[in-house]
Amino acid sequence: MADELDIVTAPESEASATLSLAGGRGMQEFIRYFMASLIALIVDVGALYILTSQLGVSYLYSGAIAFLLGLTIVYLLSIFWVFEKRTSMHMGVEFLLFALIGVVGLGINEGVLYVLTGIFGAYYLFSKVASVVVVFSWNFLARKYLLFSSQ
Image (cartoon, rainbow, N blue to C red; front, top):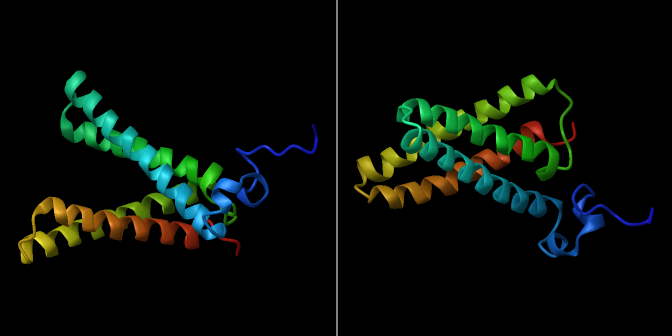
């Protein structure tokens, strides 16, 4: 039994043919980050709905609480599951940088929405889809190379 691998914690290259078929370590991390982001989004939207519609909390407070829950979920999944390597820094500093990258992503989101909808007149949901692609790419690449790479 000692030779069996734990598919949850073992690196993909050792444990699972499924993600190994998807390419190298970078592609595997990208896929896991995408899945982690979807989970965080579900938590974020679910918490927003429950707090606002079911518990009567103001949508502005609910939005902030839900955002922080989603951010915490994607951070924890990133450190324990998504990325195989981590820079060596204090966890509090790491979380602050992780959140700061997210805030920059929010600024990018607003910029894309403004340019596509405000200037070019695109339908706002089309602009949001374009924004999601840009912001997701920013968040993944910035977090991977600033926080989760060997130095």
